[in-house]
Image (tube, rainbow, N blue to C red; front, side):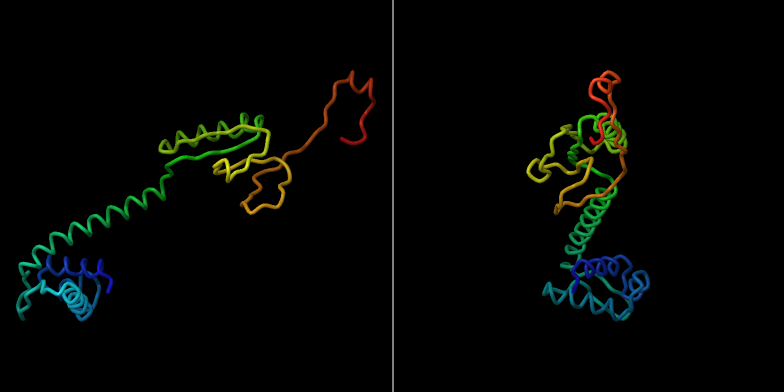
Amino acid sequence: MDRLEAMHVFVTVADLRGFAPAARKLRLSPSAVTRLIAALEEHLGARLLQRTTRQVTLTDVGTRYLERARQILADVEEADGSAREERNRPSGRLVVSAPVGFGRLHVGPLMTAYLKRYPEVACELRLSDNLVNLVEDAVDAAVRIGHLADSSLVARQVGEMRRIVVAAPGYLKRHGEPKTP
């Protein structure tokens, strides 16, 4: 027996003062409602409802249980809503690592926009041209330029960069044009 479901059915039966109206509202068969209430009463070892052919009323135990069951169901609904909201709205701490030049030019402005959109997030941008150990340094995401060594981390290509070699005219005059980088 799912106790939360049984509590919900019990509260509905108590509110509507009948098994049939509760069954209609919950889109269950009357026998399913009866079985859930019977299982709940069996589990509790107490009778919650007085049943007659014409009406359903709460016992003293049922009255006290109804109050607590309403509170428990409300707490569960609040917890569910909070978890859904957290899933839909980022919060917490986010640490991002990026190379210095690329991070200043591209990642920094993106993080600023992200923080405006999600103020519940505390961001830290770590700029370094050295590779950091994401696990040891508690980094959540990293931007890397170049080929990555095999890793157990998840990597996604987000763009491509073209490399160009530039040199001052004086350098080329003194050393000639290089054939390889």
